[in-house]
Image (cartoon, rainbow, N blue to C red; front, side, top):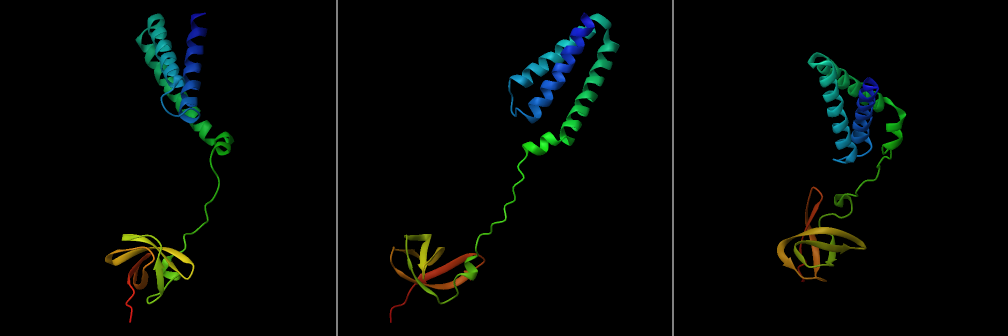
Length: 156
């Protein structure tokens, strides 16, 4: 009966630990119960069979745990649980939407950064002049990477 309880505790400890790693992330009841089962099983082995049997059991438990993790990683169950979607969207570059000299109107206040409308295209822009109020005509002065630099439009 004692050997059956020990084997049951070891098996339950390994199963709960694999479940903790893959199904129930974080410190949960399964992880705590797994640790308790493994410690209790090794305590019984040490008490009934001695130190050598306890060390052999600990090594065997570790090897079984590694084998269980390996088999679970190779199983199709993990494939079913994982996310397989592919993100193929792209952010349109401001470099291709406006060019130097294009004129537009600010939508928001440009406290260095803000939004401006260039013929129906709303872009995030940066002010070269400092603060620019909303609904102020602006002109593209420079494009650096994806940053559109604007200045107040000179009124002739």
